[in-house]
Every structure is written in structure tokens, then in C-alpha cells.
Amino acid sequence: MSNNLKVLKFPNPRLRKIAEKVTKFDKSLKKLAHDMLELMYDENGIGLAATQVDKHIRLIVIDVSDERNAPQYFVNPTFEILNTDLMYAFEEGCLSVPGFNEEITRPSNIILKWQDLDGVAHKEEPSGLLTVCIQHEIDHLDGKLMVDYISPIKRDRIKKKLLKK
Ligand code: GNR
Ligand code: NI
Image 1 (cartoon, helix red, strand yellow):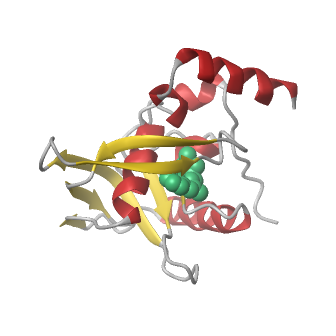
Image 2 (cartoon, rainbow, N blue to C red; image 1 turned 180 degrees about the vertical axis):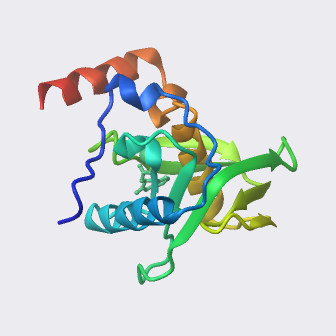
């Protein structure tokens, strides 16, 4: 078990907050990033956005490796879509919407820009699962959830089931 962080669950309105840009690359940023990573591993997730732990800054941790030994940190991430015609459908899950999986269609070719925990800028074309995951996580920073892509009827059904728990 980890570090007093907890994952907010849909329909908690705090998941709708827009995260602020990170400007200070200090020790507390690194501490939060490492605590988030621990929680993500505890919960068997492949990614976690600060919004999900009620910290409203633009920080994401991801590990898409099978061995769970390749953590990646993304501060202030943004992306551009390279080709709006190339889309990819993937069965997504979300730690904030536990027990539900939905097929979501997203751009499959993007250019990603971000800073690392020291504030150094990076730019790369991600591949595979990282492409899907980073878009899912950036959505969280903008207060957006997987369930926003599905029909309102389905979304409402999920909401009612999660509220009963
Ligand atoms: O653990 C997770 N798995 C996942 C699968 C497909 C697409 C996105 C994800 S992210 C999710 C963890 C999570 O909720 N991150 O915000
Ligand atoms: Ni999620």
C-alpha cells in the first residue's frame, strides 16, 4: 500500500477540474510523481494523471511495459495530430471508472511534446500503447473521461452502478 494518495472515482466532480501548468520543477514535484507511480503499480494501471489523485497539475506517470519496470514521467504534455484520417480503436479501462471497459477511437499518429521532472523539453512520435495511454491521460488533465466518448445512456448506467458501490 502507498502513500495516502487515493484514486478519485467517476462521477466525483473533482475529476472535472482543469489542471494547471507546472512551473516549478522542485522536490515536491518529484515526490508526487514517485508516489503516483507507486499507486499506479499498486492498482495495476498503465498510467495515472495527477487529476485522478486530486492534484490539479499537469503531471502524468505511465508504464506500458509488461515487466512494470519502465516508468515514464510527462510534465506539461501536449500533442499534435499528424494525420486526422488515421484513427485507432482500443478497448480502454480507467482506474477512475473501475470495472468498465469501452472501445474508444483516437488519432493513431501524434507528435508528443512534454517536459521531464527536471523541466527539460522533449518531442517524440509515440508508438503503440503509449499513443493511446498518453491521450487518455491528457484528457484527465483537461477534466475529460473515457465515459465522455460513449452514449449518455450508457454513461448514466455506469454512473448509477458506481454510485451504488
Ligand atoms: O490502467 C489503465 N489502462 C488503460 C488501458 C487502455 C487505455 C488507457 C488505459 S489508462 C488506465 C489507467 C488510468 O485510468 N489512467 O488514467
Ligand atoms: Ni484513466
